[in-house]
Image 1 (cartoon, rainbow, N blue to C red):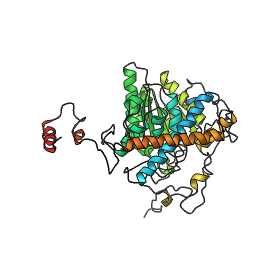
Image 2: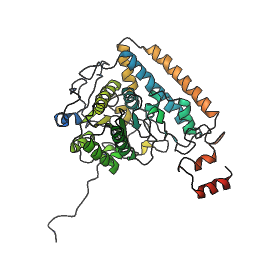
Image 3: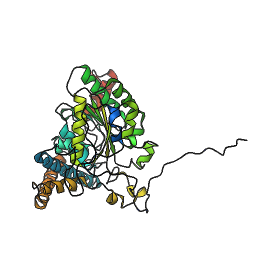
Length: 410
C-alpha cells in the first residue's frame, strides 16, 4: 500500500456564483497614472512588471493623469466616444432584432466597447485585424457601413458573404478585418502568419490578433506565441480578459498563472496589462505596441482587463453561472461614462450634447436597420442565391460540383 492518500485534482472556482455577493477583491487596481511608460525599444526583460499591474489613464474624477496621458487630442477622444455610443446602439438594436426572430444569433460587446474602438484608431490603412466575434467596434470605428453589417446578420439577399457565415462573423478585407472563424484560436496563428508574410514581402503593414480569455487555453494561442517570438513578427497579440468564457470564469483558462499577460514572458515577448474600460489607456498602449511592430521590434502581448456585462450570446443565460449584480460591482466602471465625464471636464462635451447625440445615433442605427430589412431578414424577404454555395471554394469548379449546381437549377 502507498503511504500517500489518493490523488486529486484542483478545480478552480470563481469568487461568486448565483446568489452570492459579487467580490472583485482579487483584482488589484493601481491608481491611475502610476504605471511607467517605457521607451518603445525597451528590452522585454526590463518591463516584466507591466504584465502584473494595470495601465490606467483616467482617474476617479475623470481626469487624464500620468505618463500614458496626453497622447490623444480632444477631437479624437470625442470621436472615440461617438464610436462607442454607436457600437452600443447597434448592439441594442441587433439584440432586439434577434429576439424578434429577424436573425438567428447575435453577440454583444456591452462594456467592452473601448477596446476595439480605441485600438482601431491607432492602426493605419492596410493593417489587418484577425478578430473574434466581439470586435464589432473595429468595423464601426473604422467606418464600415452599418447596413452591410446588418445585411450579414440577417443573411439576406444583400449579405456581402452570401449567407456563408454565421451571423456576426463578418469579413471585410478592405477595412482590415479578416474573416472570423468559429473555431476559436485559429485567428492567432493566422495573424502571426500574415504578419510574417508582410515582413517577407518587405511591406509596411502589421497585423493584430484578438482572442478571449477562455480561448487562450487553445493550443493555437501558444503556437502563435512561439512563431511570433522566434521570428519577431510585426504583430500585436491582444487578449480581451472579460472575466468569463461562455460559462466558465477566467481562472479555468488562466490556471496557475498570475495573469494572462505574464504568459508572454516565457516566450520573451513584452507583455502589458491595461484597463480595458479606459479609452485613453487602451489607445495609448495600442499606439505603443503598434509602433514596436512597425519599427521591427517584434510582437507585443496585451491583456485588456474588462468585464462582459451582457450574456455570452443570445443563446446564453448568465444568471445560471454568475451573480446577477456582478456587472454592477465591476470596479473599472463603464467605458462610455468614463470617457463622457472626461470630455465634460475638458469643456468639449456636456450632458445635453450627450443626450442629443444618443438620440441621433439611435436614429442612424434605426434607419440602417430599415434599409437592411428591405433586403430581407431571417424568415422573410430576399435570400442569397443558392448558386453562391458552389462558388468561391475552388479556383476551377470540379465536375461533380458543376453537376450538382446544374441539378439544383442554379
